[in-house]
Length: 328
Image 1 (cartoon, rainbow, N blue to C red):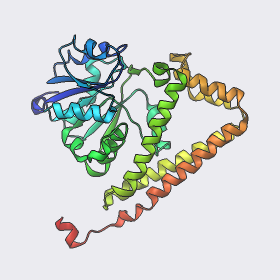
Image 2 (image 1 turned 90 degrees about the vertical axis):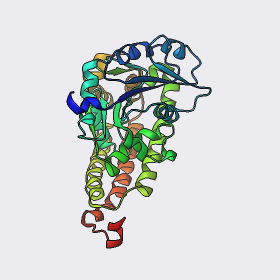
Image 3 (image 1 turned 90 degrees about the horizontal axis):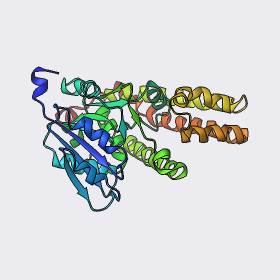
């Protein structure tokens, strides 16, 4: 990264809530990366030593008296920063390196896109493609400040903000990219909070994401040809998700445990005790085929619904604005 790209200021922002176990490793990498003008930790009402650990590094620490959620923590960080480029990072990441940061930041600094989202593997991308109602919400993302400002305040709450950033970059900005970063790891909620508490947190997050996705599709989609093209891609992804539901429905009658082991073979190799995957294996082994079949049917119904939401926007492929609309 050189030339005028280097002239752009970059601030790293880490929203953190009870992350005393992992935050030191994250700050060790980010605080020693010379491309960052500043590193800001937003302690979102932690009850552990998160803030005290952060204070031992050359970073700025902002405190919330109470836990206000990830979106509010991200907003506090942006308000405190004056950089043109923002890099958000979860406080529980492992395996970060300066080379990874270079790869994530480069397309945004070059003006190729408004945002880059780091992924641990391509499977996440394909999962997001066929489960279109649940977009990929990587906490590690570089974006322009201008993109953040395009997102209305009503969508900058909790986990809605990451969904909204994806949406506004895609429909109202210069798009976004996914980048696979090998070696990047994260402590999953089920391991951090315990299986059932973590699973409840995951389901609550998924619920928020689905709700905001539907709200955005109904209320915020622009009327232009670009929308028509995106709608076609989204509909294709949703129909692929419906096909996955049909495959799961088929697998429920042909050996669900074998299906789960094959699907998560790499993850089980890296962590044989992964709680969420082992829960799925337990359910696949001990639950009747009816429950697995219901999962397949649910995927079919949800994805067909999302395909319908997008198919109605295909009419914009031939959209021609009126003279009055062109003025605006």
